[in-house]
View 1 (tube, helix red, strand yellow):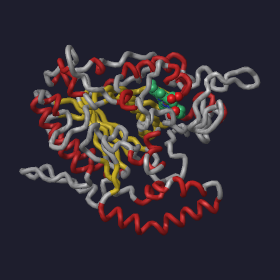
View 2 (cartoon, helix red, strand yellow):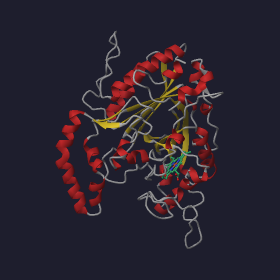
View 3 (cartoon, protein in one colour):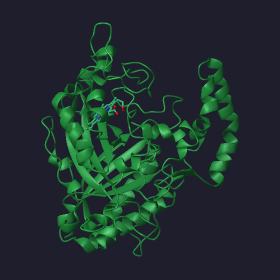
View 4 (cartoon, helix red, strand yellow):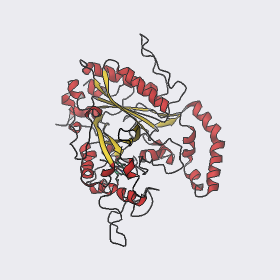
Length: 446
Ligand code: HEM
């Protein structure tokens, strides 16, 4: 992924993605100073790129790319908004996913207090401020990020299926949270799956991300216990001139086919609409403006994958490795032509190609916003890299997004022999908190 990432610096219009959702804003004197101070350097880079040929247009058409090289620390995502941040926010370089279970004895009241604490902490952290102290002096800021700017930090909160039993709110549990069906290729570790509460932390600086993770963990105090935690990463913004869509650890450009916020049906596909009216599902009204996150830890069998020649790898996906263009021709953004055959009469995008099988066209329009992080947890006991994708996809309804597509992939995806789904989670992610509100308040005070 991601097309979300591709928005970061693609043009100034796109860099405003998510103004109502947790947008990015380079703020303050610091960023202005950095920008002014870096004009010379950016200009010089442009000249070098231009002189190298082929890249001349880059500087002219993507001015924000240059800014991205210099405003990493000062870029700020907004905590308050219609949607929570971390969904349409451009992909960050660093990510942590952490799931908690409520401690024995903790119910709705304690969960509400926790969400209030977490929201207050997230708001401060995302503004680049320390988390402040508690009266007894125990909750002091760790100081890990004291000298860093917000660095595009986002903190996103979700509720798992079991949260509703623990808090006595089962009547408010939407059907979309029903457990995902089993898939034949699942090799899931229950201990690293699901959970009452889920928090996604993303930032363009590793220390800023870790600082936020620690703060969230500390604020959980005696109310919730860590169930599992995963760490991921993406390319650092500004590290490349192009492509702007990220690569995954298989080397593929990943995120091209994502729904784009500029598309008219984007909100309908990704965010839960208001549930109101006669016989309507008022009990789920709290989720309006929210979304569902499906989280899968997908191990990549890289030793096997890397043995495939590049043209073999390309047939597995249906797109070219170098530039992400479909095998039916064109550039990365050209629509796939799923019916086009080569001179030998064979389909150019093979029958079992991943991009064919997962395409909305072949899944009654089922679509999701994929916004993953790569992970690498060292070398596994069998001597192979414990690495892959923390696959996170967002949709208004998992039954119209992840589930039908994964069902189909499970049956015949050419990628299957090279990946293994090792953990899974499904979380209802409330809409963004209004000013003065905490995330989930509409549920927890209903
Ligand atoms: C490690 C596992 C996976 C890898 C390496 C991977 C890689 C890719 C790549 C390279 C593409 C083509 C470029 C693009 O459109 O982004 C793609 C497309 C896509 N993938 Fe995956 N993918 C993985 C797992 C999944 C899973 C589990 C799902 C959902 C169940 C999924 C759904 C999709 C969808 C919806 C598309 C876009 C298809 C289109 O719009 O034409 N992928 N994936």
